[in-house]
Length: 442
Figure 1 (tube, rainbow, N blue to C red):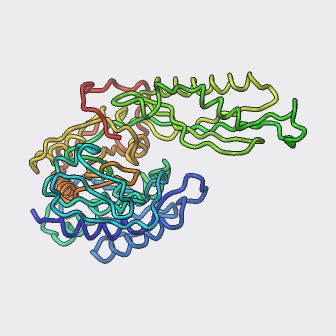
Figure 2 (cartoon, rainbow, N blue to C red; figure 1 turned 90 degrees about the vertical axis):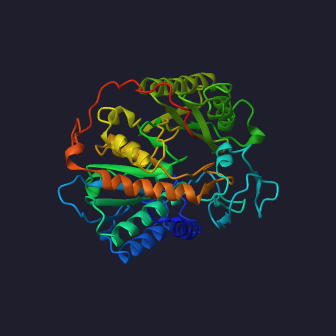
Figure 3 (cartoon, one colour; figure 1 turned 180 degrees about the vertical axis):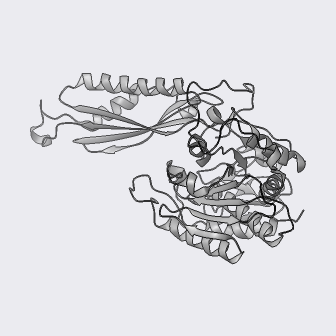
């Protein structure tokens, strides 16, 4: 098959320099206008390579079709997200290609004290001779998920240039706001029009993921009593003091991201601010099981009630909202999409592995909304920070797997236990089919 490395590298470097960071504090859709800059670029490129039905939706998703060369096959969706994480600086990205990696430490021009090495990122030690892409040290790279964007665009260009390759209709979607949990608008399943789909948003080569966290977001608002500090004795109720008390009462030695791994969930305080009059604490709650997630929500409410009890003059309001649910609940009822991806890996000489994602993807929401959507590797590593890196050769492997996958879909092999356009089944989740799976990626 074609060597896609040059095209993938060029696309990744071109896409990563565009700032398309999302913003959870924004109420607009998409949350930032700069994501539409990326959307416009992709729409122009898709039109230029001959894709059909190219459009950008009201909610900021770019849609396109690669027409079928074989009629009567299921419609396959392929997705990647254009936004980058708001957890770290994403403006002014300067991507750097480290050719023919030699196994040693990698330095950063704009952050001399920063070092990437196999000791820090063990997977890097497996990439001898690969072309490694990083940022310059003061920003994230944005391979999450512009690597996925580059892979899908490269695969699309190849398929459109080779109409002799057999495949059914393929629907492409490039979504905004995945990093803040708003990547799947309620209109997307119908607009996508796919029988099943894949997100290109995974890590190391061979990972085919069908299990994610279940996730809730929480906002605790504490309203104190504001008084001039000069006359505050016996009157002032400092909301910031109560916020710190709340955080200190939550688990510290357990049930936090830094103290958990594998299938353990957590409560994560990721933002706190305000004034003596009012303070806001933002948290995310994660667990692989519904019961575990509910227990973490109950614990947070119990702590809020305890803080409220210490100061009745204040008000402590805890709001918990659902974000996404473990896609395993639905995918395990019919593993056909997962098995197709695994077979595509094997056809490329890659042994597939399924690990639980300690996070979520657009596929988590899409699966819950009726479109079975496992996640496929891209190669991205150390995401959401300045050490983020990716191998161009890993991206090429993902591109080849995508092309194999769409060529393997056959109507007679498609046997869904539940129709993807109907409401997914409810009830208690099935137990994991492979409880001894490898530890999940971060």
